[in-house]
Amino acid sequence: MALRRALHFVFKVGDRTKTATFYRDVLGMKVLRHEEFEEGCKATCNGPYDGKWSKTMVGFGPEDDHFVAELTYNYGVGEYQLGNDFLGLTLQSSKAVGNAKRLGWPLTEVGDDLYLAQAPGGYPFYLVDKEQPSSDPVQKVCLGVSDLQRSTHYWTTLLGMKVLERNEEKKTVLMGFSDALCKLELHNIGGTVDHGTAFGRVAFSCPREQLPDIEALMKKENQKILTPLVSLDTPGKATVEVVILADPDGHEICFVGDKAFRKLSIVDPKGNDLLDKAMAEDKSDEWFSKHNKQKAVA
Image (cartoon, rainbow, N blue to C red):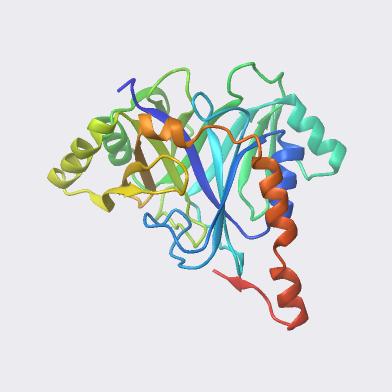
């Protein structure tokens, strides 16, 4: 399955300003593109919300060869409840560690040359204090699972990933579609996986012709399909086709046709300015404060 590749992880964010500071100023990522939408996504990219929302893609480089973050912001929702499903994103960058120390962003040393930082909303990021590589600094995403053997079977036998490393002591399995791309680590948490309301989604691309096959295999194996094969339109940009699945623990997985997605994900040089403009024009915090109300807690 070398033709399949890891693309991004979707995070719901309640405070775009603090979030932008973390990704841009602490981690050193760039805004790859920013989009505003007046109504919810057909594939629930922004969660189960129908109102106005925005999507901001941030990363160390274009999604063609980097694993990036998709930050979804629902106007009017100020906070989400974390579960134990997303256990961390690991990246290698002594620059990020230095930025955090310089800016006073809280860091916890958790190992040799390894620090834990939390993105706004509480999402854990592990920073390896070593020189940032010329390739993608993002090394892996870790998800909690309740049955490691069952989940390993799902991700390898059904989705085509290969096991790269097993750690019986830590109860983890590291896998991926390629040695050179961002890896997926599954960690047995020894109990039920709780997705809270902040539940994310991990996205992969594959040749478009594989999408019906993925859907058919999931039907045959009685696995959950959250969104059957559907076309998603972005005004003025490429239309992509996706199938969205859920693994045995309910982790959301999006597969998107690669060719169209490469066109959709072209870096927009105006992305950074568009995000800044949207944040400046978002008066929702002022409105809620003026009316002595609090934004919704999802």
